[in-house]
Image (cartoon, rainbow, N blue to C red; front, side, top):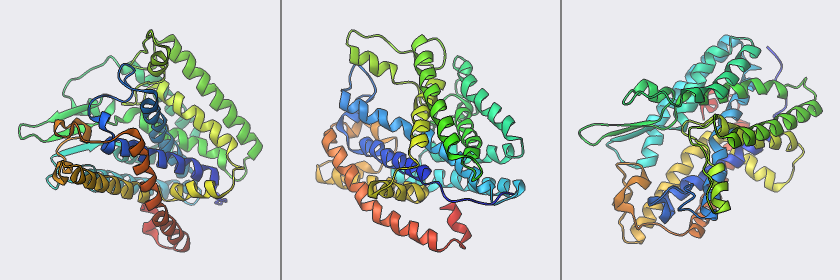
Length: 389
């Protein structure tokens, strides 16, 4: 067991940035009028500002999962492998429970729980359960398994088992409905996500106190550039690496939109190269970043679970208020399906400028709460349960 080292603030910074961007995506879901009519990434219907608002948030889930894997590495420095496995199992089960209860209620505000989804928190939880076993293997083997899954899982794109829950959980998103109107969504199939977290766990070794910072910077820069070049090459060839081939349109910007919109559900090889490449470049060069702006984002990165729960409830509460004030009635925000799927809400919503305004308000309201909770965690490290928050 190694001696823990100083916290790497660039990791908190990147985590905070993607958490803040995530709130933009969720604000758009509940407040943007066009979200109820078309996919913001559809080149034939969207605009550049709307597309960019959606595209930038693609970084959130893969980067957070990758950073969660690095965090597991830091936990491993303070525990034996058996202790680490136990922690990951408990943490993973806790996240799955939270997804199915507290998070589900935050999305829908419906006490009947007639719509449930397996989303990002579920994927993180299951990834931790799998990683609880993988940590007993040599890191070289874990790295090989992670890369094989990330590179090879798109070989399964043409394998379909309609109505099969197990296959949906593993690789193909699906919706399962019942005769009484209940719905069960599997939006985050597991195969790529567990590999992203285990890949992050392997990259954690670069942040060991014995590792030379200049060597770390060089490695991350080279890999970041390699990921981006591979993305451009694989996506350009348009044969493998994504179930959604890009299309060439007469309008250049529409072609670019199609090219830069690989599949997220599940995250394709192209999608992961596109998002993790810039993330590695950021990590390579952000360790020297200082200042108030950096401290601002780091605050969110140090309390991601606390922030995640609060931002969902706050956004939905504000949407409930907006629906009431615009004549739709707050009851319309007690949802029995995903918010943008409901015909009853078509016509509700606002322009993109107000989405950004609400986003700023959400972040502004959450910052002091996250700051206080961060200070509490720092001053109460003896409280074991804070490791689950």
